[in-house]
Length: 220
Ligand code: CA
Image (cartoon, rainbow, N blue to C red):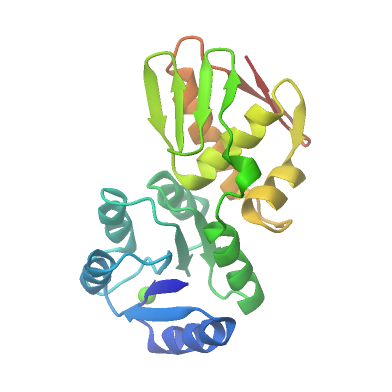
């Protein structure tokens, strides 16, 4: 698995290489944003680890540029840890956000969760009312409207549609989609918000209701 790390701090770069290479990852590094974009364009990695505070352009600019071309998983790894920082990165299409300092185990688990391929049984088309989810294209169609969704948002829609009309707990969603029972579940909240916002714009779309402290339910 090819990991592209965009990070300007040499001590972090070295630590990441030492952590990832023994786990079988092949690591490419870029010390600034423009080099990172060039490396991404010359050969598509399986996952990008992206720092936000870079010497030339910001990590968010790198993310924006990557997202015009690809839905490759992007895990932001940053010292910036306010809710606003996390929200902007997720809104621009980051799949996950890890704040520095982080544990190596958690980093590896998150990379694995974000690069997990859909298994064969996850590959079937789902229909709820007028809404059709097509795993072969990461797409949801509602009547004439087509959404092409980032991976995590797609998986979230898929789990809610599979169990529509029933409550899916936050723990289940975090475990199945993010891979571990995270203490921090801001990513889940953000992804739910994004999905809900897409649905709200379309007539006849399903609704996602919140059961506070428990989970979510998709209703057609
Ligand atoms: Ca930095």
